[in-house]
Image (cartoon, rainbow, N blue to C red):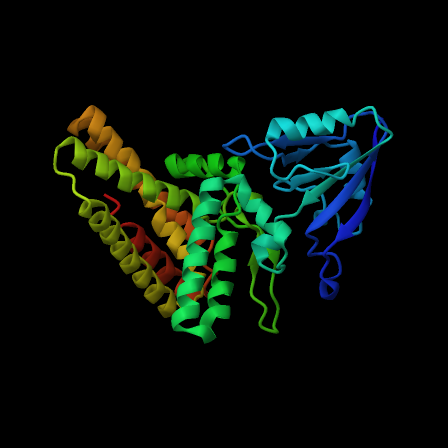
Length: 362
């Protein structure tokens, strides 16, 4: 039977012991199974940890650590096998590389921990590999960040560092894998069967001003993301353009007009929500609000496609359902994210959230 041990840690934050490990190696000895289940992303790229088999070699290696949450967790990605870089290879190629080492006396797998990227506590090029799980998200992030960085440096040189920090925070919301996306879409389409909406807390914060730190989407299915809102927003704009083109009314301004209108309406929603939270004396990351207000584009895509294919009657039926489902999802998602107010403000918080989700989902 295979045995495993933590062979090497790299890029640890010396001020926080080994909590912030970015890359680490696990050495497996023997020819037995390593006890790790892997999955891939939508594009068949990378080998990502799905689960650790109880009682397996990896599970025993985790149990031997003082802080076992640092190694071999769901969402961690294999980036090297016996010294061979596999960070940009397909899932099948990575699996073949792992199987090819079965007969050897020692198998060393190097993993990338996305927590460092998600919490924006490291600045190392290896963390950029994580975004390669979703090439479309990576392209949007890298291109947008580069464009904004150039603009900020041109007009506001002193604000460049702040802009870079902002985009570092944005990366957190794109730390997704296919398991998260599937779970999140299920929650969006049928939220009534989901019971636990509480987010996983990685750092409770303290009295010195440290904020609560939540687990990233790849490690918490209740965490908001920007990948699904961005993809559904782009899809909705393209569908509208197709409908206009099919009816002979398309012109280049249609895409700009529709996208501008959607962004303005979403900005109004975010401002209203921020105002309500201010009255509650509660704080929430503004990117969380961008995420929650952006999930409605999933329903808009479904409604538009149903109307296009099936006509008005099925459209109104689906419209009613998606409106209720989106409102239910948003209400419970925000309740799981907005800090719990005191007893006197709790009823006002619930009324405010109910009014918000009832805004115009229909």
